[in-house]
Image (tube, rainbow over all chains, first blue to last red; front, side, top):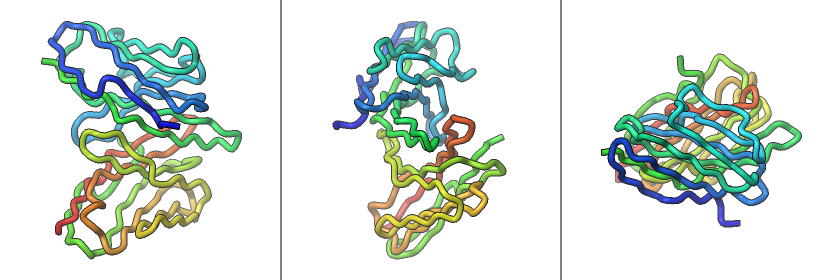
Length: 116
Length: 109
């Protein structure tokens, strides 16, 4: 078990370009989450999947954002027509929802996006 | 309105001192996690507490979940420079994890 991995670790792009990030969760985990974190703030929820189903999307997730988890394993987060306000750390987390209801999330190292 | 309030926001103390940081809410949580995050990295899980009144110890760190499962505290004994970081609490409620804004801790040598 190598933990949650994210790729790339850093991305610099020009405004208007599209970017895609990848997250590989811990292999036996059925839930996968995407968060955005800006300086001085805690992570803000964007969306999450249970297996391949996208169960919830935050109002923070505008139409320019789309996330997929096609086979219930890795996930991608795409941002189209990036804006400077999209600059942030994008965090992925995975968990295994237990019958007891506990849902402890394990985070990846994040992808730092800078939009110029 | 922030559902989980963490206090203080910033804390700078000398190595060797003791400290307590707090995570408070008016809502009940099924469980609560504490994470530590270093600059440029993702949060790293420290502990999960589930039962009201539960106390867990991790070396010099003591975590307590409030009896009513609405609040939690993290106490560090004899702080070390390696304890420096952002401490985040996160609560599970209605099948959703909610994060506080964190306490930024700086331990001075």
